[in-house]
Length: 414
Image: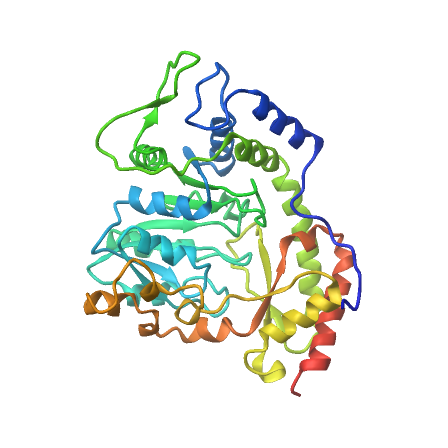
């Protein structure tokens, strides 16, 4: 039973304009990229153009989900069997499983102790002649050190793939995250800062990569210009094996509407997050992530509250998350465990390898072979607060701070 019944802002949000756009998509006669051209620009193309412009990138390719965006981005970067991709030790499982999906090997890399994003030093130590791509995942309102990581990838001739599923709208030295890499991937799943219910976007400013991205997610077909109404805006060509990873018109209509609200919503979140940071300075045993100085405008899908083991005991994340959920009347989650200990990352139990048939490949894919001391410790000693709580006024953060103080009092070991 909940101790309190606080009312928090609802998510996902929608407006009368959202309903109007959905109704327009419904009545348009075209519900997907592979539907006949009606003489009007599709919602999918409208969203792609608007999102690319928002990021300051040349091209955006909407997909059916974030995992699909990662997959087509990896293939557009020519990643395949025999290649290695550096993946941070803390991230959602799709970052690693997308590498498996294209036949490559995920190499798990430890994270920076302050930001919990991939450590540039650990990435450099993990490089081998087979390394093809560094997947820079920006997490919990922080970011990979893009200046240092850019130097590293350029020096070694590697591609940089940003995963920005936590940071829609954030900027690094005034430039949007997602516009730095050779390609970037975003998730638009229901709980994300920008949502279409389910969806994703792959982004690039390279015209050749864009061509491959577009065709990879459209069964190998490319966009057809000058299409007469009643015919498909897709042209069949040889040379690319693709998949049907397209976003529907309904999802695109919702995403386009949400994009128009994103900056205002992020401004509200920042104000409340800053207030919570101030409040928890006075609570023993809890502290936030460090924001790099170059992160000029943060955006956080989840706000990470780290727990000092000497105060709460090691591995207290589940107990603290449960108590906060009870106190706040909202679902608070424990941080994801490091990928080498994560229940959802099970490459040896998947169809990507047959047990006993390829021992070398089994050793490559075994997540237990990676030592990730920072990720392992951080992945057991933090909780994450959902972004929609921070749409509440800053003064509501006193409730969160009070709940954290209660958790320290009840669960603390000192």
